Length: 260
Picture 1 (cartoon, rainbow, N blue to C red):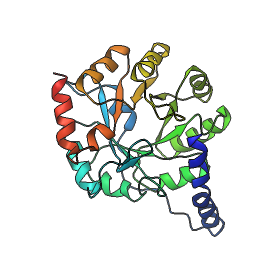
Picture 2: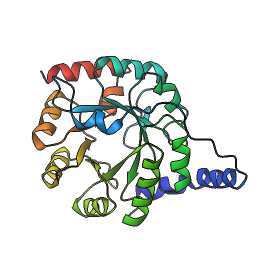
Picture 3: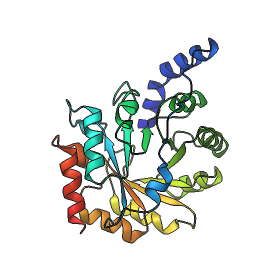
């Protein structure tokens, strides 16, 4: 499974964090303001069918290199000016990004989601040393409700939210057992890398009162945002569709224009 590959890739990083912890050298928690991620996605801005979490991603498992040479802080400013409610930042350093991007992109003022393969408490502590307002927890990566709850509660103790990603109803059961309130449904099959947007939206019929849902992957047009809203989803995460072509701010503005 693809996630097994990424779990192995994180082993060296976690070993380094453990060594730093043993020497009491872990970075201290961020002292600045963390914009409220949950509030930003719970209700779309006026005129938008859903809130948009715009992603900074230079490459992906399915596409390889998407866009290179773009400065994170410039993309963050573009997203903030073009209607994004939050920014998702890939920080996995072996394949996709840098954790340092969070501080650089935080200057735009939008809530930041750290998107990485997080399954260890030291990774949550590391995230807390950045301006991230939220972090991603993937049920398939941590298929134990108790562990997910510990990680989520740890994140919340630092003033961050946890976005818990699911792929099917079985994952959703585990997410709920862990106490998750923000549910992200990924339309991409992690084995084949194919996407099924409709299957993702069909999951929204299971949404309960008090939960905020995000649809991720395969969102690339204004019509897709309207369909997500009609399905009962409050927010969508868009990455490749925005970054492809090297003008993410313009692409986001154009897609939102299509929803009017």
